[in-house]
Amino acid sequence: GENVEQHPSTLSVQEGDSAVIKCTYSDSASNYFPWYKQELGKGPQLIIDIRSNVGEKKDQRIAVTLNKTAKHFSLHITETQPEDSAVYFCAAIFTGGGNKLTFGTGTQLKVEL
Amino acid sequence: DSGVTQTPKHLITATGQRVTLRCSPRSGDLSVYWYQQSLDQGLQFLIQYYNGEERAKGNILERFSAQQFPDLHSELNLSSLELGDSALYFCASSVLPAETQYFGPGTRLLVL
Image (tube, rainbow over all chains, first blue to last red; front, side, top):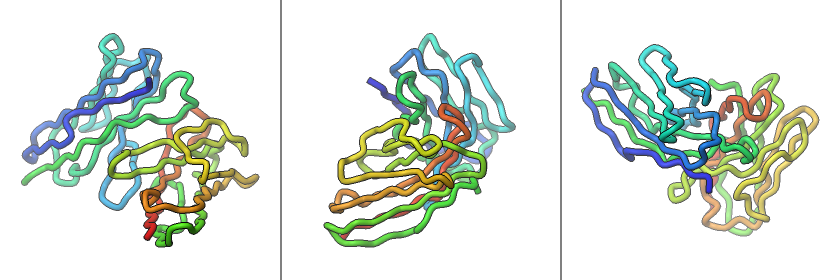
């Protein structure tokens, strides 16, 4: 079935360090993988996305890598800042799934001073 | 601010009641999606509309229904409410199906 697994569920890093969150997906035909950041009391905010014809994408301190053979993708945040503290969700659109997003279970990132 | 608006922000009601949640997509977006976020189920897709037509259905209960109007705003109707329906309900929109989805701020529903 359509499934996205996300690890770790919680992640604590020191300010300035890097953070990595990993997701695996079940359907090799998936072709779109977004990442969302959700702050307390707010809706998910798209921070970066990647399509299956690309292996890596960067946007300032944020990067996403995709390994289609292994069916996993990762979010990398460098030089973390306290304002990066939030819950991060990976997601995928599965072929034949009607364009709905299937989400991972989320990672609570805490950036400590 | 994603450009997607949702009202109301908070809703408190009793079991057995019916409520309507409203969503206005970003300007120019034709597709609207509804998601439910609860502690035990995470973020779950409910239903999608594209230009007024139902496009896809997820784990949406029969007590729930939705529609998208000619001006492209959408409403999610929840009836015969149960305690377990308490959750955050998010609307998202995209220009076309399979394009990037932008989420609204959500409606927090509490059923007492």
